[in-house]
Picture: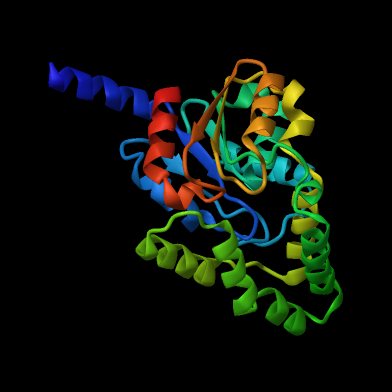
Length: 268
């Protein structure tokens, strides 16, 4: 009996390859904890253009990212269509992909989706501060701009702002992850362009065009998008379901990767 269930599960996993897209200033390493909880599945996580090991691709617009992902998926050795997963900025790219290439994926999963333009929800002073930093990032000489955008106080500040857990060991792990990978962008100009794209675009603009079965996973304390806005987004996407994880914010991939993986497996 148990052997039969294991055999069936293995068959399902092989029939459900997964492609995952990370968020702004992240790299594929940021999604490895979720991948760890998806043992048995074929999980593919690329660095997005201009981040980690990947050079920029044309310009850092959603449209160019969508074309890059389409080319990337076509080069994978997949016998079936993949599930596409995107976290944060990756959710906008994944939504854009699902809207343009619905027949190329089985299902869509959006983790901490950016339901509305973040430039509208950050607050005036916060938005001006961040926009000024990235404006300097594309106007200063590369060395000075990289020093500014990689400043420890800025990186640690973002870590503190986005981390909800009170577990000090986990908080230190997240801080160290940000210190290690947050500044592995290719160059400051492409980073600044990607930032402006992430701040001015949203999943919401693609919502009514998405016909693929979709799962949205949100944190109830996400500073970027309130749960009420996530529900509005889910209502706009045909054949979608919203799952809200309690006591977590925007970093569900670090704080609750096991719960994220469980929801992914249930949806599959």
